[in-house]
Length: 87
Image 1 (cartoon, rainbow, N blue to C red):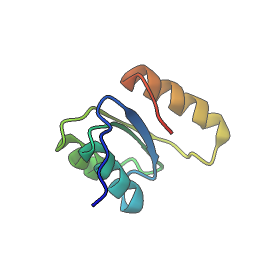
Image 2: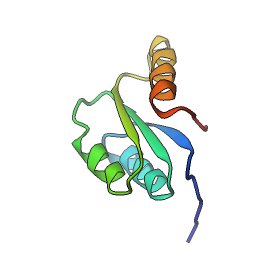
Image 3: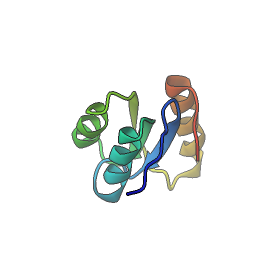
Image 4: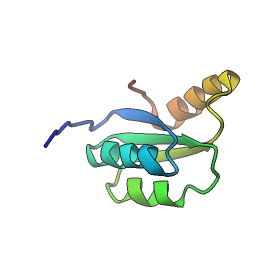
């Protein structure tokens, strides 16, 4: 089993409301990361439940990341709220 410690790190996950994005967000939270999730869906209940079970901080932003003008806003909001990002 692959194991990584992301305590104190912040990750940005696109498509975080469901499917693979939600799975990645969950695993990142399990590894100790703070998680910023983005999705076009305004239903982020599954994201909130998945991330909060591991006691990390989280932020969810409703947006369409295919719109490049939105990406600077997403980065700024996530950085202000969660302080640091890794890619």
